[in-house]
Length: 124
Picture: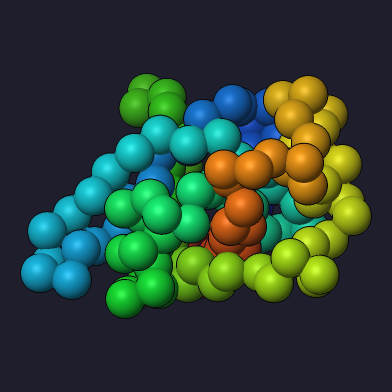
């Protein structure tokens, strides 16, 4: 697997939106931009548990993520795993606060933290 270099790391820490691709139970794709953080070599999304992407991940945990800038693509594939709320890493909570001024622990709607460890990284 390609590893994350220093330039990729900077982009993953700085860029505000990531495209999230999941698959519906009938196979149709679902694609949405979402806020994210990069922490300890993983991508974290905080999403609404009633959202299409959350329902899709409950059915099929494969996920593809892509940074917005198509001129310098950075695409990550992996398995999206819901993190139990009592196990939310403090560093992830702090990074959402730093990046977006968002306290994910106090949000009533976006209560599903999804962790993706990259299994494949593509960039060019």
